[in-house]
Image: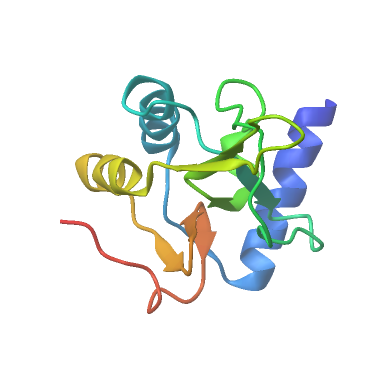
Length: 141
């Protein structure tokens, strides 16, 4: 068994152990990732929490970097959630305060267009790959 197969097996075992249910599939993840580049002015930053990782924390402040939805988000099968903050800080120099660029409205439109269920807490959007409690996830129609 190769390394990837072992990782998939451990991930499946943890999903079963915790009673998680799949929310996203590869097709939805691909559509979501493609839309981050095609429908938005910049791919928003995100933090990824894998099923096998217990120490990921969502954003606690705005950041200057953008998200890597091509390579950085793979593999899809192990994503428990990603926390997306659809805004970024733009540096205006050392003497001028950074500017905050928000694309929240456009981001919500992408979620609606592709029927991506999410949870919105303050200024962070959680996109779940797996969950056990569906009561907090917005249903997109």
